[in-house]
Image (cartoon, rainbow, N blue to C red; front, side, top):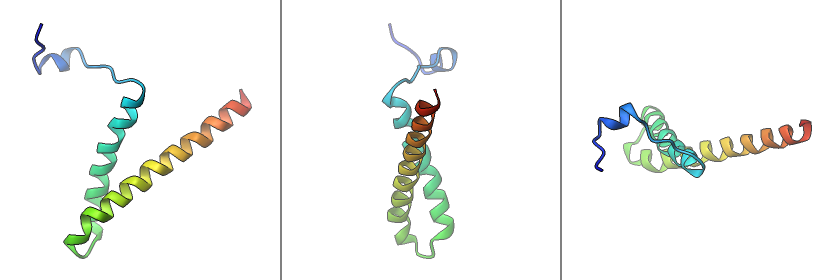
Length: 76
């Protein structure tokens, strides 16, 4: 049975596990590209600067999540 693209709006695909983290990376990358496009003076420095910012944001979010998980485990 073939699914049409409009079926995704009626019955969305559930994303679980590592797929949720995988969907975070394109969102953060898009945000970092827009931010660095505004902030960088040279256009040639935008790709590397935006990838660095993307990795920094994802890493910091994972560290904050690990700390919050640790606090939750201590208090639960």
